[in-house]
Image (cartoon, rainbow, N blue to C red; front, side):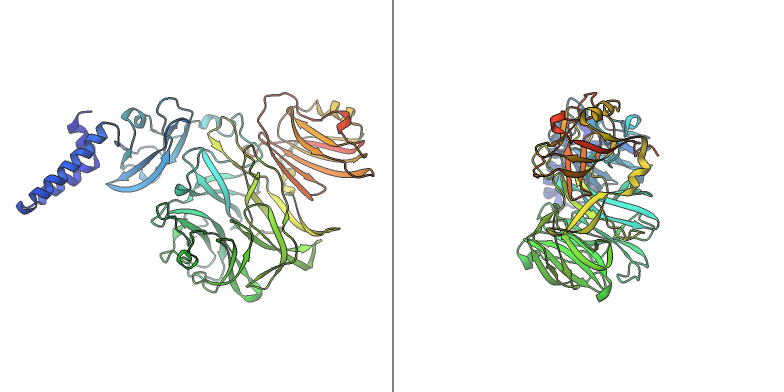
Length: 572
């Protein structure tokens, strides 16, 4: 590209020419210095330090090539000289490993300018289209889960504010749409909707960056009485804004009056800034709900070493009432009946992991009555908890407490990573060890059942012969079995062990086992959710489906065995 052309197309040229028109003789020297700096910047553009490209938007999507080995680059998009978007991406330099996309329909008919420290060749491979690259294979990719929600492209993590609102389930999450390696300074609030908790439609992001920073995790509530002044029955989001420059974390509000289609920020943000007070930037992930007995709004907020409880009458002015030490990040907090008795309830408080406490709550303070407990187990390939940052749905139409969690699973070779685990229903039950919380798959899973197989009174060898007739694929399995001392229960799927359940009792033991098996995960529920195990599968190409791992590693008698193949959630 000639220097004159580069200069004319650069964002510096209009500023330079405008300045020259208005200069006076006394400012000539200063202007010359400024002009030299602009020319130097343009020269750097020519040499690939910062490349510019302008195009008129005539189609809704920009497809951007990503290279796994490429260095991360900051892309900026300007419209009429004003910054509209900025995001980091491993813009492919040679090999293109996969494509991401951004929706630019809001700029339809306008000219946009890219600024990026890349060569003209690399930035020139970004193109606009009516479809995202790979639309023809979307949701049918080799390692795409078929009964678990995953994003179209990029990274997803913490669940944010799941809620039932105006007859629709809304799911929000921490989204990094620009690649499979996330960047916490550029997170969005992803958004999807469903009518049945199974089939989800991914929507445009609910929130992107603003002047306070990246919108981190939070919650969603319905303001039935217009306490916050956002409108009666407004959908109100509470979230943490993270400033990637200062690392400040402050609490903010956004709201919607159009059914959750669009959100606008509260002009008085932030509503809580406790960084200076606590001498810490670890203040994040607000969980908000209405506490009817005291007629107050309650916020549970992670601060430094635990969870703080705040009260508010107007949803904007908050007073810290107490602090509970020990749990970390992404709190969830709710009341459940014990053994189904609505007159006998306890509160459950848990943080980012599956650790939780059972106790009482008076509107201001939570008092634990149990030791620190855990409702899920299982590690991913990196040794991290497979289940993290779970949140339960607010305003459920049938008063169930249904939660959905971030599943820290990898999906080899895919243009996306991470997933949402299958929704589970919580309950409190009485056990010999005390009151415990259990998680079981939501009953709606039956709506995905396709072919069904039912057998009774089987030995392991018989069961394996029958199981071998069912090819690998998404499965829902239930079995009731009796195991003699010394016989472990070991199950394999596609030549990978997914369950090793020791029989450590001196007497025959009866177990109920339920499994949800997908492309890259197995979720296993032992004895109606008393144990909940999540395993990240490797996506093997084996043709062998589910089998018991040898007769010596199986139950003595399988009383009932039910296997259901599952229809994909992506096929409406």
